[in-house]
Image 1 (cartoon, rainbow over the protein chains, first blue to last red):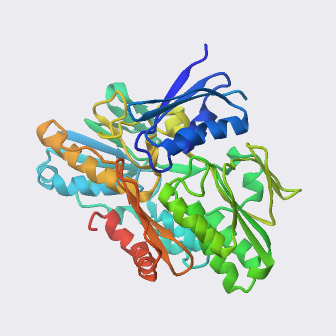
Image 2 (image 1 turned 45 degrees about the vertical axis):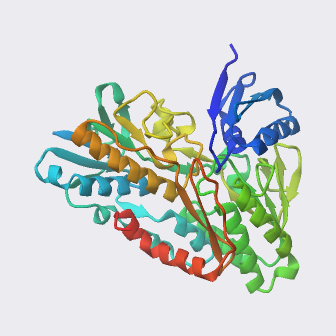
Image 3 (image 1 turned 90 degrees about the vertical axis):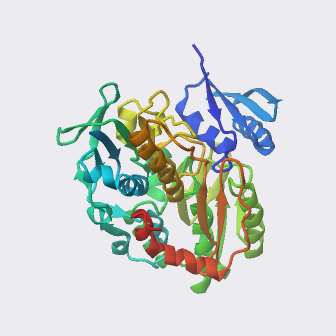
Length: 76
Length: 378
């Protein structure tokens, strides 16, 4: 059963949301997802860009009350 | 008697122990509180000094002091690492088989570089995260006669400024040896800019341009081919090298993962109270947390101060008095004789200033002042 792990990277300037995702994606199984919460618009753009470059699925990107939610599914 | 046990004798564990020993001096003296530190080593290492060892500017022997000499009177210290965390029964079991019961437990076991996580990295790259590796890096730099130096960075890693510092210090080192015209330094970084802190990246990228250091972002090393002298990235690009400098990916300590306390050895931690998630009397600090925050000595220091206040209040009054606000302070060496710094917290990003010689000299002074800092005097 695929699962989704949430990374709360709100207010995380360093190492930042994409770095948190890069670390966490090593820890999940192919088919599982990561949802990154971020207050930084830049990372809301960076994460999908990186995921597409590497070939992971970008499931969702949305902004809700100043918090960006980006959901990535690990494909390999 | 209230029993406080601190697991780990690095920066976080030592500052916390000394902070608590001062706050609870009366209770310790009266036998109302016990304070125990359990560590894997009788020596304490000043880890940021390893960067200077790699450039021949500090001796490895200068990085160590006896751990016992750093601890306040009243603290019980055992060189006996914890092997089992029995949190449901409020005790830990050490390597020697002793059981230590606690009312409050703080875990500060730290993190370690894991070059083996990237195939080929351990065999072919140099790094600065152990004495042996920093010494080998020093030798490789000394023997370097020109060519392409590549810098690769794994995730997560300890001390977020090291990728930049090692690159800038290497530039000056190569320049001083008169090899600049025969050398090309190529810097890579895992995310879409040259540093995780946006304002630091905005300062560093033009510095790279000015010095002729090339850079590539969104580069996560997948493997290193020593025969071809080439790094392959997860993103599909390759980088050639003659000398490869790595910031290896890190993990927390093995015992944390083995005991099921946190993936990759990093424990799920409340960002304000520093409680281990789901445990009111267990706290985590330093590199051991899974907080989305820099793994740095200053992080451990500020966490230890917040936790010291809270643990003292818990022992005396049964409640906490403050939250850790995410404070971090990092020096950034911008070459051999200039430095700047980044100071930030959960709410406020850093605003780094142009590097100066004065900040560099302050960093060199801090390399010595650390021993007062870890004693809780600074």
